[in-house]
Image (cartoon, rainbow, N blue to C red; front, top):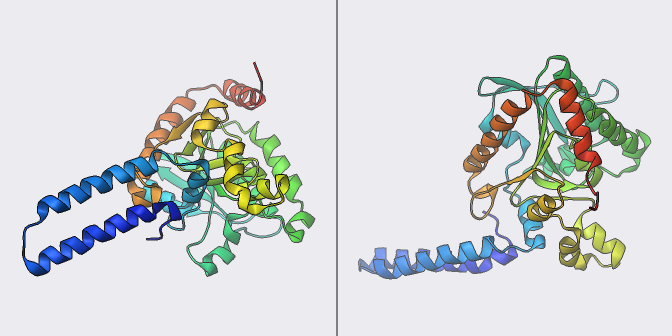
Length: 315
């Protein structure tokens, strides 16, 4: 499993424990008490490391190459997933997956950014950076959900919308703006969860929801830390300082009332126990769908509108 720089002390201690265990096995001597002491020390080190992460370290965990992606959560949480493709205007954008599925017995529409595990997969899905056709596909799916009165579940995980010339020529900014406008009036429950990166308009383009959650080690921001550092200091190495200034962690977002709650992850990140993370997500989804389905449509839309209109208001 890939390790991040700040995890090196943990890796070194784990290595020592394994070496001691091999030594005990080879020499057939009892040093179980020493192993126990080291394992206790390791557990304390993990707790101290992962419960005191800096904003930049959280960004690194959000980008971890083994972190679960949208299709991973769909496969764990849902059954009968039928992927639906294309925007009926240009092409099918692999950076956003969408389709019909069941969450237990509840039929849902699910939409989410998708990244790849290797270079080939990342090129196929453009590193999770959606084109205009991806946002149009997502909107088409939400309109389908509205027509059949199905809740919409959205998984956000993108560094940002694709900024290439072709995307701009095909109306990138207009596609995102249209989604922002139309999602306010989609008359069916919408729940969005930031499962990794939540970068700029690329994230918000499918993020206007009745309930907005972030996983514990995810981030949601108007710009990437590197982009912010390049603009403010003309120096990408200032990304850690930018991450702190952007107030992009779950704790900051909750205090600023940008999100509704933070979903806990297993110690060390979602990639260490995807099933447990998925279970935490499922508990939230089941609870929120049950609650939101009791809203009258006009009340649902009014509450969603007021939710976003109230953001950024200084008392």
